[in-house]
Image (cartoon, rainbow over all chains, first blue to last red; front, side):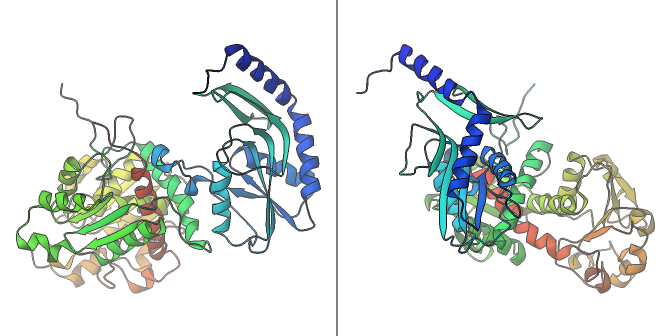
Length: 182
Length: 322
């Protein structure tokens, strides 16, 4: 059996993670550079609701890409539907032909990998893309599937009791919140 | 005081069965409508199927015939990847003398997850819901004169789609309101969602004055009923009522309450016309109106699939609690 983590270690890990994500504008510019490096001439950005979609919107504008960024919802492909039921949020919106497209999926936090599994299935319901990459603002430990990001602006290690989330206030300012899971 | 929870909700207030719109809070109705929005586009995808109900079984129990309602439930369940079993109960066990609850017990033993029930007796789906296991869900697809909640919800979805908001709307429900479970479900849904004015329109024999207790305005002429309204919901004139003394003749009904192009001009210019089907052209509604620009009768059918997908996936995700 795995020994209980000592609280001092947890506190230190949380402090370190908080430091790594405290400067959100700096994190975002790193993400912008990373995504820009992954982009080809006809790349499309697609953000996962809701945090990923906020980021994709901003990246799309900053990279001066044509059209509008896509939005992907994991709701219809979630594997925890039987436990959690259905969450009706913003539905998937892809205003381009997915067949043969080069796509970068954007998300705020990569954790278990289950959301990515779900949205990749969602994406394939619309067609067969040529290439799909994943760029995230924060990759944290706790993967439960063989899924990794092609680019992560920050890597953090956190105890399982903690959650990381991107928030957006009314003025559109982004912040990252690390807190105990409810 | 004896407090009894609405049998459709679990103790967290989540929908576990859909039996009637009566008694459901506006938040649940909006949740169904919002969820249905995300299902409308599923039929535009290359893969017209999502895996939410994969591995679950939906039993369509139609004790009363209804090809259209059964078909839309079947399509909805299949788009959610459920296995669908259609049982024409009217022609099988019940005719051999098996009781309703015995039929349900037998089908539950075949691992049913959702029962979609159409029955000529009001309240039959309630009885079934009371006796099924906690993980089994019941959806009322029309019971007697009582209720047809998915039709009510798809009507609300259609109205919201075209009119956005209920708070400034005047909606007229025209025809045989007395015998119509659709009318009853629509009235409950519209008043719950805060519709400004609901009118029921028809002859005194089919629209009794005591309907006003439901919070609606009773009108006995079509002109009064549809003047300046935003939505006209026409009801099917059930032929079987003709034999009673309730109506003189179909022709006379059409003269007084049939919706024609000329009469529709009394409503607002952008008013929409709805009908739950099947339509009797020339009895309650003129062909020119059915096929006209203001008719949204066919979109209603399409939205019905998304709404039924929403209802099935919502109830399937919620567990009943004691």
